[in-house]
Length: 284
Length: 321
Image (cartoon, rainbow over all chains, first blue to last red; front, side, top):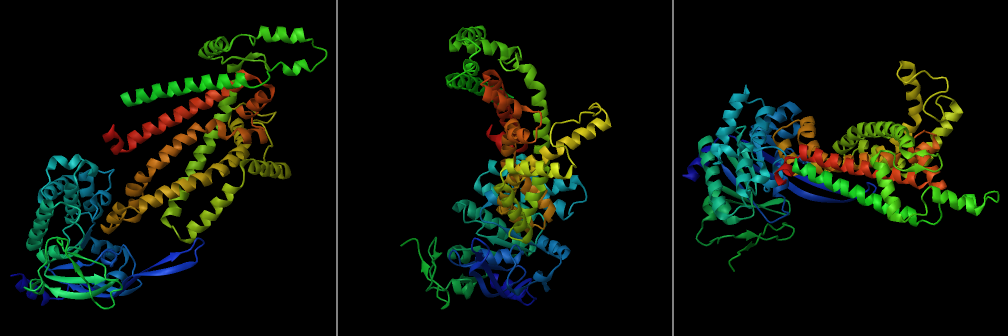
């Protein structure tokens, strides 16, 4: 079923396409003289199709989050191109970028710091709606905000609460609700579930898969948990040392020879030049 | 409400404790107001002793403190031996002048520092930040007294500004436009000296607080939602950065009286500065005591105000309370 959907989707052009993306950070000495250049991404290319879930896995520091930040232009890459529906995101003017950001949403790992703790959940959910003038009046906005709360399974009475008054799982739901407020076409989930307990992970994971099925959304799911990636993704791209070193499809992940235990993680393999990424099972 | 009442009670206790310590320390300092009279051969030791008895200096410390407390309750704050009058009558108009000068300088310094610090934070690492950083570093390294002296030199050489006082000898009353203009001209140099000293420190604080807020993941998340830059600043980053700034505002209100003393002395502003300097040199204990108490009250009030502002501005503090 997943394979059918995938092949169907791949017949159309990718909704998001990355070509030869390179990102580096220059560190400076005390008085501004350049000290070193840290290469975060090297020649990254990938495609994401409508309705597809691409899992991006890799050890810490492999460049997964940097890639996600580049895709919403929170970082400016040194070279390369990012196409959203055929338009280069890196060459967009402010107005076009604003409308594109409406359609590509990033969900951060740490919801406690990703939500403004001074605002109420209602204000947080309404903010993107106000900015993008989605609702013509305040009563419609209130309705939309309540719908979002229902969508992620949060009680409406918590709208007046602030992020720090919610648990980690509830905050993550609120963060997801905020991202869904603008009905995006692409969702970038940067370790969005990794800080949650297993049961909450399952609940929110199911919610996201359900939303994907209903709205044909495309997900770029960043995780370091291969087993989780194998459960949710149509395709897995493995990153190491700022490069994509391996790509496997959903069916390849389930070959009988490669049994992935719970909590199977990727360990850093060094430079990533060889394309080898070792699997480390926590069960050992 | 209870929180505010509790803090007020703590404040009163702090002021009371400061009064005890100040009184004890001033009394423990060697010598007194009449010691200089002893050097004068025309005044007999008996006369000096009689004067000391007349002004109650022979009484035990607790009794003298009790008298001072009763006098403070009447608003007199003791008796000035130099001026031969109640300290309260010397204090109030000078405190008003000092407050006018320091309050205006603080207001101006904040008005300059907030946009300057925000601008530096928004362009961190860029040329605006670098030029601003160099300017604040230069201003911080110059002592306030040197700035005041340079301004005095400037006023003396150009004749554009008066070199002291707060009104010209032939000036009209303060209520008229001419009187107001005269006061503004006299205020210019002392205010400029204070603003030059205070602004760079405030800019550094504003910049640091704003950079921390702008680097927060929630600001990244807001940018990712397409929220425009200026809305990010005033709706998201600045309210978070304001916490640290409000605490510093409380401190700067608390320092209102003490911050201008040196500048007042150099630029001859008739505030508390010259009065307290003369009182210290003459060992006019009650005047010194009154000025210290006034500073202490300002410090407590500033902190109380900052606490209240924080309570009003930050819902997280209200939740904890």
